[in-house]
Length: 439
Ligand code: URA
Image 1 (cartoon, helix red, strand yellow):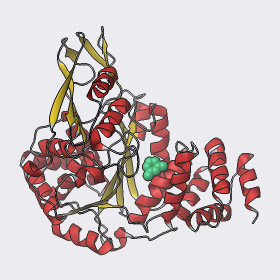
Image 2 (image 1 turned 180 degrees about the vertical axis):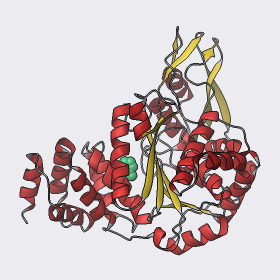
Image 3 (image 1 turned 135 degrees about the vertical axis):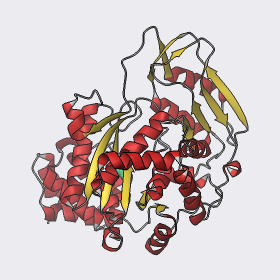
Image 4 (image 1 turned 90 degrees about the horizontal axis):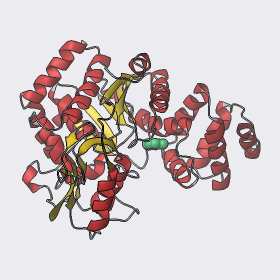
């Protein structure tokens, strides 16, 4: 096969065969095709797209480029969750103990921070001793011990994705729908839980900023999962402002514990409960009783107790007092009275990265005490001088003045109340039926 012809076919808007896609993916995984040709095809896919069949073949080939753990084969009861990413997205830290508390084992392969968003692995690294480096046997042991496993992605899972993602990052081809679907789903399917819920974010702090784009991505991800035998639902949720009150590592662990103790952020609790409910329904549960059981697990302290068991099973210290503290807290206040309007979640996410909760370059050290607390939400009335957010300054040397300016600029204080945005739009079908108004 002449690979130049494959690139030309996609450049001209034609569909590729399964064999041509296999050649592309193997060429990436085994580095038998030059990066120039891989990059050229990535750009052609970005422009011309892929039909559902091509997208499924791409995902299948990426999945089989490495180890396939096939959890469903040994533990058909295990569920998984994936978020397309955002800021203040502390859901995984609440969802795992919640599912464990209602007897539904959950396994998640989590990532480090990506761009402006903080990663679950980085948040867990703030817990002294918490180990996320487990192979398949270790993951199965964790599920037996505590009902949940949150682990880092094995190097051997979907190696083609690592090569292709690296090239996408430097060729402006990250936003392509089929490439995103292949990248996300190859890793999910390699873990191989039988049941999967997808949290697809829309809004200024998300990957896909419009509702239409989020719906399109949710439908494409779900289609591939279902075509490959996974019981899957996707929920579209709001990322026009941080979901929870904390952006960082240790501070997000505290925000999760607050929800697990029956308080904390209502938006974070609401989104987590909805995703948990979808998982229970996918497993054959009744929606109303699933919601009742989940709410009871939060209220009774069972989910909080499950969190401690999960931390201990992963080798961590469950005492929240052992989490790193900031060295200093700097409040950022409203300069005028008014209504909180647009909140630039991406800008806040970058502030959290720069203060020490993320990395601008690969070798940056995280500062676990650092982060950002957000005190107001869109639609709230604020007085001049009222704190909008607080910088948690940690071990990293930072330009406080610059960070204060950036946080201040991220909150638009308006003369009128903004249009309401609900945290949950619903499934693909609900979102389309409601015209994006939410329930
Ligand atoms: N997350 C991934 O793993 N891959 C993408 O392409 C986008 C988000």
